[in-house]
Length: 356
Image 1 (cartoon, rainbow, N blue to C red):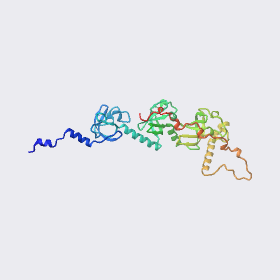
Image 2: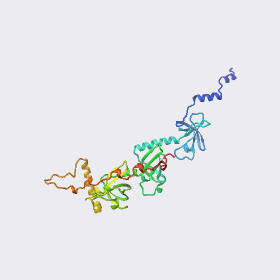
Image 3: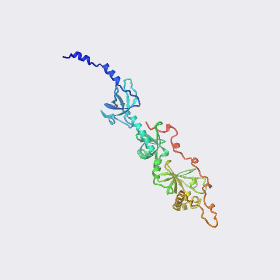
């Protein structure tokens, strides 16, 4: 017969032995690690998670999601197993703090970078406005639309809860900046239906020393001062007034910069008609535009339609043909048109962070 006392002594396992065994097989956890864990206890403002450490880890409710959470049960369920981000090292009780929110943020930044690389158009609801523009959420991140990139006649305050198409201007996780453009999305969509050489009707919405901004179906195009007439004009104000209805021709579509360039100069039957007889320019617009398109097509094929024909006696026609080099044309560097970078807030303090 086996002695019970002797058997107990031979297989005895003390608390000290158990602790030593745990130390021997304990895994080392560091902040920043992503580990698998199982929910084993729900708390009023958080949950206890088994990740294989000596002490259960804890996830507070504010770290459960990239979005607002009012109760832990909205995100986690008992015995559920999923990934967790180790947020902090062990406290004095040996407990680690976990986060799901950090994992969602990392994946959100990865997703918006991918969308930017694909030059994708995204849609989002405006949830707030401020003095600089409007705020939206993209993949859970807070995005900012500068006022200069909002193409609508509505006051900014009325945009709240309205869904807008958007293009990415800046995606910078290190600086916590996510900047988008409503204007660029509209211009791209509009450009898909527009063609160079097409005549469109628009309304003068703004006049600057360097040109007039024309609204054509909800997007703005620039009629540069050098493209108003073959004759020299001192200022666009001498030709147009705000709210004038005009007929213009599209001479360039720049989808990357979100810009449409317009011209009335190319529609003039005779040099200076935009100043002397604007109605004639509008009446002949389609005819002159067709001639322009024909010239552009011939130019692409290397044919010069303006080359003089062979005749017995030369006819001097040079004075009647407007030469592009007779009048100085302002280059882009002289235009006081803000680039995308210049249109953004001057300092980080003016730009809301993507991660709240």
